[in-house]
Image (cartoon, rainbow over all chains, first blue to last red):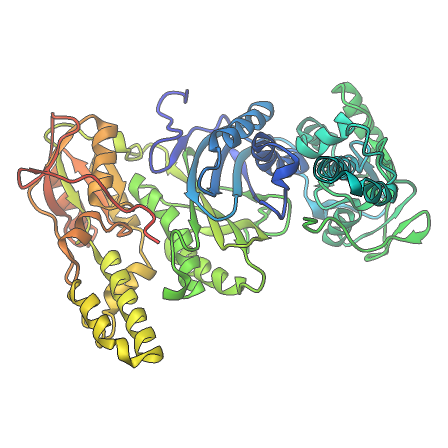
Length: 317
Length: 317
């Protein structure tokens, strides 16, 4: 229920009273069926959950808490919108964000757009931007990478195997050949953690807040993959970057860790690495993982001394 | 250019500093090609313009100025997004709203979602809601109705005529027969004002502000048509309504005025009709048009003593 005088769903617009005033943060993201998600590899609840979480992740990257969300759903006739709504509500509940309005329309293809609003408290540290990194800054990520891409790979292998064994037992050998190239045994069930990372990505809000509090100068959320998003951050800041290591998650390949995307871990650049580590420890968060340093060579990104390939997550479906 | 410290396009989220603090208003709307607009009857600039204007119209209905907008565009490959952007920018310029962020993705069908944010200044009159009408209140609309629907009819007749004369001269008689039923001569060009009303609807921001200032208790923008939106307002307020008259625009039919939709005029209910008229006059706005009164018979809507039919504008494409 909205507090006194506020209006959520049901009028021409929502009327809300933010708990604090100050710099206001606004972000929006769009998910399109067949482009950003494969409806056959998850539930509608997953789709709703992810649609809100990816926008909230933009807030994590700024170190700001989200307050309110608007949701637009364009859906084919017969779509179980309540299940989308359940996933959206779950993500809203987990991130402290209230869905105060939206719009719903028919469409030949399922499209979800979420717009999120929050207030960066006054008197505090400014929101973290992509452009705040300086040469010499230490680069960290908030967790091991490639989980979402690995989860997607496992889901696809399982789907392919399922289809093959259900429809035509004669082609089982073909399936084995195909999946061998990705080192997956389709007879084993997908690893739940990796699959969950793909279906239910979690915005690193607490990590983003802690990083901002510790004085981090620049941050970005890893939606497109480490290589692509590191490039975004480096370009916005006018720096280069030398990486020593890339922490791949258990079960993820090196390529998935480098370019898989959709991990929604944060990449931060800080001149005060000790403060970052201490702030995370004090907040009872998993230690941030050091991966390298920023340099004064704009445009140059290396890993172990070798240039990083271009690329990232580009609408893989 | 954003003022100092603010960030518009280019980071994970936009950071803005609202000019005033207080109740915050949030609204979103969705346009889907083939559902809300026919791409063959207008330009991409029209689509962009309308996509933002319909959401701003929700602000007009509250009597609140919009400040910032986020835009999500899902578009088929090859769509000239710059033309959509030009229309969006035009609507933003006309309504004093700044587009501070957005998202763009590929999609099999063109979908635009706009989310708009504004602040209802503190110390002032509260935003107008749908639920504020009381029995005895006088009902007004801010202009004659049915223009958008009439414009759409003319555009369709012109398109049909164009197609017929271009492709098959033998079926010209059929065309004449078809269009006779709507009293349109397809050899005449569409009336520019009506066509413009359909392609470039204008949110009644000044009228909404004046109405709010005059103490109007309830308002709604006429997006679905007078009958449907009057029903929304009456139901939210728990009142009935007796209409004396429905002001049809020149060139619009009575049905178009009643149920055409997309006029984006405002319907207001006020206990102080003289104050409303005086405030509009002082603000140099066209006089609001009286159409009837609210009653203490919830659920009952009449026009000239006869029950109003159900219905309204329901995704006519």
